[in-house]
Length: 216
Length: 249
Ligand SMILES: Nc1ncnc2c1ncn2[C@@H]1O[C@H](COP(=O)(O)OP(=O)(O)OP(=O)(O)O)[C@@H](O)[C@H]1O
Ligand SMILES: [Mg+2]
Image (cartoon, rainbow over all chains, first blue to last red; front, side, top):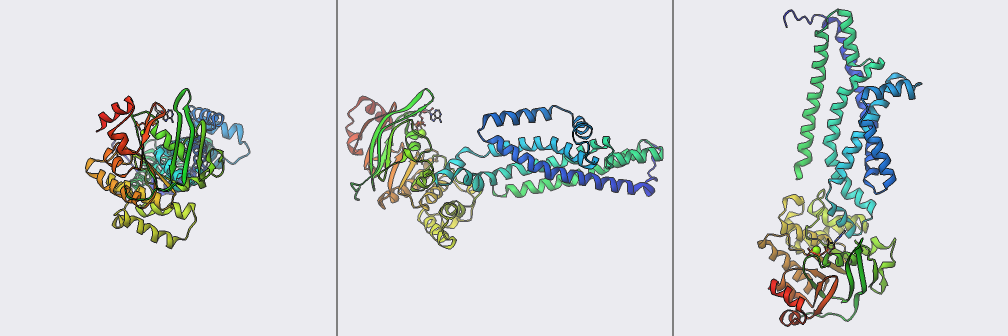
């Protein structure tokens, strides 16, 4: 604990800011893609098509059962070999996040009371209209908080793509570590940055939840 | 009740059957419902009352028999089902108000989105309906802020907004605290007096006797006994009706 020295920051802070920027970009794009894919998967999953549902379930449990780092390797070295590492990383993270978002979506849709669709049908709405006007607006309210939490998880998960040399925060702090011959402080700094970002986002999620439940 | 029940048949139910897998819930239901008539359906739990109502608006697909509505066999409907349901409203035991919409939104969404009517006109009508059920001042409230009795009155207004020919009530007061039953029954009574055709599943024997034009006692998937409420209640012919009524009255 003694003799901690953060003097290197004056020279290396730019490494952290560019690393953080890369981290945020990765998380942002991954969130966009995985939300679209995950919500679509989840909505299909709520339907009654048995074969499709079995395939989706198998896919979800497969992805959940494989370490994220392995997915990154498989995508980068095995499947999307032509892709720049930045996009390969996003693809891998998207594959991972989208299955969780699919599960949140399914749960969020199924949590809407069954009577809501019946009431919608009883005033002459089609199944589609019932979904559009009644079920999905309520499901969104259920899903948004878990989506926001997924984003927070993503910020941390992006550190994994440092293994394919994407220059995000964790990767950069390793460089700083090598260059300064200091083991501890460069890591502490990046940990502090991760914490700060996720903490701020957490506060945002709380605000969001309070707003959403104003009418409950 | 002093009001005219027409001879015109709205619903004609013939040999209606409904099974869930091996369980045959409705075995042979035959019933004519006339325009302006209030048909009260009573019977023990599990006798198929809800299933019967749900067959009438095709929330359940019957497995046998016929249901004629305004001279058409509705069991032949496929694409027409959504349009048909606008003519047959339903009020649920647990209200099922749309939780994402305000009171006004609940009442207007059908006319706006399904019937694609003009917004101003729809809102004006909705406010009149809310006034009619005594809730005009709660128009912008969300359902979660309402009491059970208020929710059910909104649900009735929501159904009325579609200008249905018939309204089905499935134990509309069973989930209410006793002190709120009266306010909902009052709305239903006024509706009956206005000439609305109603099929009412209920345990409220006072309401059945006072407001009902025709009483139907269901048991075991059959209509065991039917007739004028007064007659059936004071002078039941079948043992099962007697047993049931002795527990209810
Ligand atoms: N969707 C369904 N799937 C399987 N069985 C069902 C279904 N709906 C109803 N049933 C069964 O049909 C029978 C009749 O149910 P129904 O709800 O019509 O009775 P009810 O007369 O309305 O009773 P209660 O007074 O308790 O409301 C019950 O045994 C019930 O378990
Ligand atoms: Mg019932």
